[in-house]
Length: 90
Image (cartoon, rainbow, N blue to C red):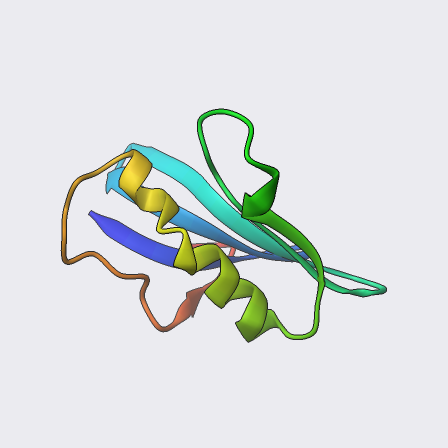
């Protein structure tokens, strides 16, 4: 099981890889003219899990990670996102 940020044309996506054939996007950050928009996946409606106009990519990623959205798919206690960002080609 891997949890990592992957480059995307407009920002980065937080990916949980449960197996070589199964990936779930559990969050994302995109760059806009006004800063960075971030969201953490949820099952249901929770507008507090998305925010616009964050000043930096790192702050936006921290916002997403604070919700621990990967816990929707796994109950593993010790999983944390990798520090390196993977290329979109990986």
